[in-house]
Length: 119
Image (cartoon, rainbow, N blue to C red):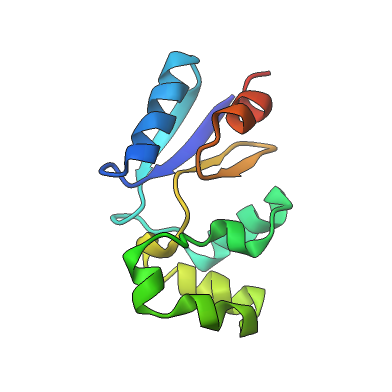
């Protein structure tokens, strides 16, 4: 299986996830989230495919999240509005993202990645 791996190279969690992929021999296409931010259309497809709540796609620990006061704004926004907002800046998107044919993972939890990607 080859996956699309979307990361911010300076992010330590992304580095751990990339090392995990390399260590497990999983092929991936690397994409820098700041240079090539996911579009609202891409995010919508991944969100639907993932079955995850929309909040799992939001980087709630980032500076931009706090600066924009999104903790208070997100509960009143529609999923479409959130996806449009995420498409404006890669730093708002939870990372890393791993997208495969039948899987979408947000963030890096080793047990979850092992379960979903090692087949």
